Image 1: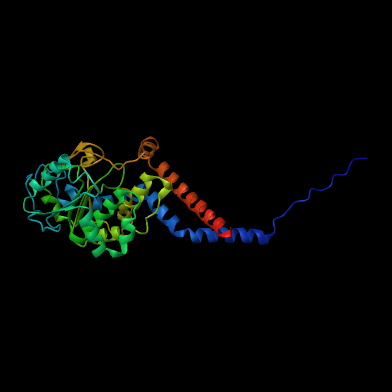
Image 2 (image 1 turned 135 degrees about the horizontal axis):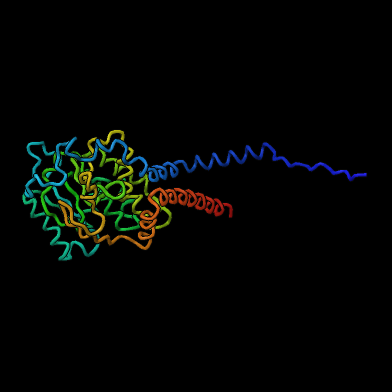
Length: 333
């Protein structure tokens, strides 16, 4: 006689537990919807940046503009015969100690003042910056004063002074080789960055520019300690990646001009590192870069920017879940 084999009893999960688990997942997604969306926008930048790029990259074909600047006089301070949309104002920012009083940076800044002798010039220091933010942007004052890293205050201030006064905002390490007049015909201009987006070290804008206003408005939304690291926190909350993301999600980017080189040299105006462009000698101080910057930039160079940004998205979500779990555990104690 054969031995009878008893049928294996299959355990089935009660539908109620499945429904409860699904409800918890949906609740978690709902609670994290803001973080998830903001992370998505930041991670999507390399994928959507070049949409309709011909409409906002300055070119001879679409704008009748010589991006090499060889046709323009180095002392041309006006866009004539085009109207000047950007007011004749220069802004330099020097918060904390050092840059404003350092002879090297003073000489570099003076090169820009000499190229624009009839323009108004502002050197924003701690005192004047604090007054500007408290009087004209009081809703952001507490956040601005409590930024974790000094460069975040400088970046945020760029957008505020540009929105309030218009003109040109410049890093202290940009030595001017020519005047900005030819570019004043555009509502907004910034140099293309590599591999995507643009640099905020040099920006021109009309007074009260709508896009610059959005850069100011969204500062609070993106004000997170991204991944718990300095470099992502700066780049994603106030820096180039943040500004480029807001640019990429505008419905009409035609007037938000990006200055790049001709097809054979697209990086002609890139301010990545110590370089010389048709407009500037960029001394490339990058003094705010921290220990994590080389690691993240290295990942981008080795694997392309999809991998590090996917990493950012995953870790940001994990960081959020861990933080919420800790808070709930503390509340139960």
